[in-house]
Amino acid sequence: MKIFVSCGEVSGDIYAGGFIREALKISPSAEISGMLGPESVKAGGVMRWSYDELKLMGLLEIIPAIPRILRLKKEIAREIMRENPESVVLVDSPDFHLMLAKTLRKSGYSGKIISLSPPTVWAWRSGRVRNLKRDFDLCLPLFSFEHEYLREHGVKSLWKSHPLVHEMKGVKISDSFAKRFGHEKIIALMPGSRHYDIRFHLDILIGTAEILRSKGYLPVFSVAEGLNTNLADEVRERVSDSGFEYWDGSGRELMMGSLAVAGVSGTVSVEAMMLGKFMTVIYNMRRINYAILKRLVRVKNISIPNMLTDKIIYPELLCDSATPERITHELERYLDDENMKREIDSALQKARASMGDSNAAKFWAECVLSRKCLNA
Image (tube, rainbow, N blue to C red; front, top):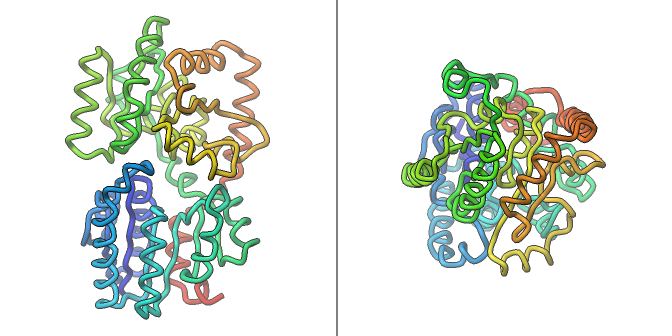
């Protein structure tokens, strides 16, 4: 059996890696290759293209790359048609993968196409539901509310749990972490895993670290494991030159060892929630990008934890609101107010309970490999 897998970001690579690992347990002889990242390769996939090809963010930043992306789509589609795998699993990176699926169908590909972590049609660009219904045999969303939305709009969807439920069970504080930081009052600062994230947020978080240090906390920056070498070196250098600590290991371990977290909106907010940690969520961008997105997005909140309960768990500071002073203020509100702390911690527990309780990657593998699931 041949399966083509494509992912384009760090989080997508993690999901793809989990799927590949479980699929090869079920079917060890399966040939799994595609556009992959390090986690997918570690799990047993064969990299034909690097997921670095799609590490783009921001409406204006994408425009110059369009010709290259279109050539990449054509090249991958041609290779899929030549090899004719039984299934194509497209993970995250919706703009590219919706184009790829459409091209494959127009080219006559008759195998199964699965969207793992499908587009957030519940939040914006709901018209893409048509693409999901037309070109995909199955969607495997991350959250129960996504699954319900897709089913209500006629898209075939299956859901059992979020992958972090299984993954986060093994998170613990290592001896090296404990030895290095001891019992300091750590605040984890998470500047992101993409060039865009670093560019628009690192200075803000360095400013936040200066205030936190003056108040007796130990700010520690995460150097995301998925960063390319040059960008990781840049983060280390800038953080060190500013006189602050950084952690090269697991960002999850850093958050677990912290009192609270501040960082860029994304998967990290869900990880913080799973660890029961309070987080101040920030997101900065070009003004024109923000103006465009504000008109398009149909949800009030940008962080998933705030969508899982009827209570705002994490403060969200966007654009001009994402200042070091505001970030520190929100962290201190939680750390210094016992009543607020109890309320937030209770809401975090409720949100975590809505994430399911099984191995999502194993479920995905069973769905893709089982004709019964795909044909149901």
